[in-house]
Length: 108
Image (cartoon, rainbow, N blue to C red; front, side, top):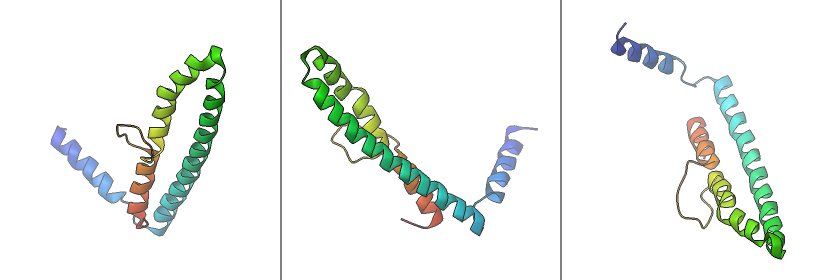
């Protein structure tokens, strides 16, 4: 079997498995809903983390760790949630995944 035959087989699998039945659409909607709930939990957790980092920053012996966290891991996580932040750069976010699913289901 050559690569063209493999591509044709793969294309047929994808076309045949296209989500178009009610059960498939409902499953996509459920996945999108669950991801939205996770996104909201992540946003809440990041707000709590930000509050903790502000408190930690006021303790002189941990100021460096707080500033390091605020400039490294905090923005990385925040940028992975959605594009509603003040940081430079763009990533694929959990919101992008939700939007793609909602577009497939026909919801926006």
